[in-house]
Structures are given as C-alpha cells and as structure tokens.
Image (cartoon, rainbow, N blue to C red; front, side, top):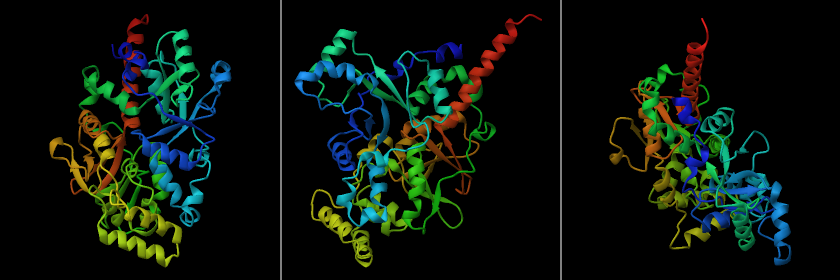
Amino acid sequence: MAASLLAREVSDLCLGKPALRSLSVSATVGDALTTLKRSRDNYISFWNCNHGHFSEVVKVDAVAALDDCRCVGKVCVADIIGFLCKEENLSNPGIALQAPVSVLIPKTGDFVRHLESNASLVEAMDLILEGVQNIVIPMEIGGKNSRKKLLQNNLSKSTFHNGRQYCWLTQEDMVRYLVNSISLFSSAAVNPINSLDIINVQDIPAVHYDDPASSALPLLAKCLEMQTSVAIIDGEGKLIGEISPYKLNSCDEDVAAAIATLSAGELMAYIDFGGPPEGLIQLVKERLQERKLVKALELMEDYSGNSSVSSSCSSSSDDEFGVGRSVVKSVGNSARSVKRSEAIVCHPWSSLVAVMIQALAHRINYVWVVKEDRTLFGIVTFAGIMKIFRETIEDHDLGKALKKSPT
C-alpha cells in the first residue's frame, strides 16, 4: 500500500506553488542581488538561456530556441554575502558585484536536476538520496497552443522556459507529504532516531563561540548546498545557537563586513531578530578602519545613514522558515513558545515522527541532536529521514514478492 501511495505523481506536490523567477547566467552578481531584494523570493534560479531579451520580430522563433533551456543553479542573498566576505571583494564591493553570477554557482556535483511532472515521488526521493539538492518540475498550464500563446505574450517575463513555467520540488514538500501519510509507516515513525542510523555524528558543521565568524564561511557554503546551518558551541561542546543561511537571506549585503570582523558569537547577536546593537556596529566599523577596508566601511556607512535600514536583518525569512539563532529549544516543548532566536533541537531518543513534525513546524530541513546536558551530538536531515522511508518501501515490496513466489 505504501508503494502504491508513493507512486503518486510529483505534480500533486506542486499544486499552488509559484513559478520560478529567474535570470540568465550572463547576469551579474549585482543583478541577482537587485532581483532578490525586489521580490519576495528567497532564491533566484539561473538558466543556460538568455530568455527575456527577444524583439517582437523574433518572439515566435524564440519559442523553438528555448527548447534546450535548462536550470543550472540557484542563488540567494546568503550566497552573495559569502562572496562579498572574501578579502579581495571586501576591498571593493562595488567591483565584486559586477562579477558574472556564474561565480556563485557550484561547478561540481549534481546540484540541480529536472524531473517530469508525471514522475513518481519515489523517483524524486531517489534523486535526493543520490545527492541531488534541487529538483525542478514543469508546471501544467494548459495545452500546447495555450502555452505557446502565453509564452509569446509574456516572453519578457522571467518565469518561462521551453514555453513552460517551472517550480522547485523541495525536500520539505516530500517530507510533509510523508507526514500526512504517516499511518502507512507507523512501524518506523514511532522508533527513536538513535535506532534508525540517521543521526550524522561525523560531519557536523560547527564552530566555537569565540572563533572568527569568517572561519564559518567554508561551512556556510556547504550548508547552503545541503540546506542546513552552522552550529555554534561553547568550550564544553554545548550547542548555544547557529548561523543560518536562511537568516542571512534576510540581511543586507553589509553583513559581509560583520562576518569578516566579528567572532561567531558576536555575529549571532548582530544578525539576531531586532537588529544589531549599536556597539557591535561601531566595533565592525573600527575593525574595518584598522584593516583599511575603506570601501567596505563606506558600504556600512551607507546603510547606517539610512533610517529605514541600519545594518539590519529583517524578520521576513524567520517568519517563513522559523529558524533559530541563539537559544536551544527541544522537541516536546510547545511550538507556540518557540521564539525566532531559538535553535531547534531534539534528543537521540526522540521519535522519528516527532523530529519530522518539529522540522516542518519551523520550516527547516534539519534538527540538531543534543544530549541531556545540551552537548551537541549530531544532526538529522530530511535526506536522512527520506532514506528510512525509502528502505521501508523496499522492504514492503520485497515482502510482497516473497509472498507471491512459489515455494
């Protein structure tokens, strides 16, 4: 029964989702930043075609020309902030923003994969377990003629490719669907996570509270790909917070200066909900002056001089993702009491379904695992959770095959 349920087409999981907004890979980093700031999207997708730049005369021919248009990656504000943190880019942020956006797109790995709308959920899960982080699904908007007409009338828009619109199929979409069908997997769902071999205890992205925030940059780049965050721990290994790419997505680009000059603990306070303390803003400026990073200091001054934004991070990303920053909150406490400044954690003995619900409630793809004294033990991700469900399906199919086989 579980196998037949998960044979459902992925298009069912994409109903009501917005079409991907995109830019061509010929765009600049600055173009991407401007587009992200003007939209409500957390990510902008990039395609290997120069869509949206056709004259009226060639619009019809352009429909055929876009047949090979493919999504090659996506970029968010956190990607851009990480790029600006490099020493050579801090020296002149204005020049750095003129770089081609391709410098932000991973050159290795299976970062994006296209999947047809009639593919099964099992196929999508298999892609995630193979290491694919982003799945693109075509959206159905009517017959071929209606799609062609719509494209010809909207070629200047940035949501059409190959005469169609597309959307992301996320790990959250798949796990939410599994939770809604949890009764079919009750035998696995009630088990504690430490009995399921899904806690990653080896490659935990973590830095010490007193470490330079810049030391977290390589981990942040990896977390952006894996859709997790960087844990902040104290001298005893206890989890005290995190630096989340989701939170950085709600920040202005001047936060790059804070990452380059503050400690990891100071950065948590800087990007936390409510905006950075004035003392930390002045500390960043002083350290920029000491390092003679004049252009970066000018960027800070530009934002400090604007009364509507003072080197701040808005709460919009938190509202969407519910991600945490500085105080640990464990599974079992009321979600109503969880504030935006809290990291979301569970324990090794927490049940699989409890961890799934906890992550979905806060719209994150991972949950930190801590011991009873809050020492960081590991991390559970949606990819690891899907592995358990995929194995359950295989066991179910094998059992059916054995029952049917002759004795």
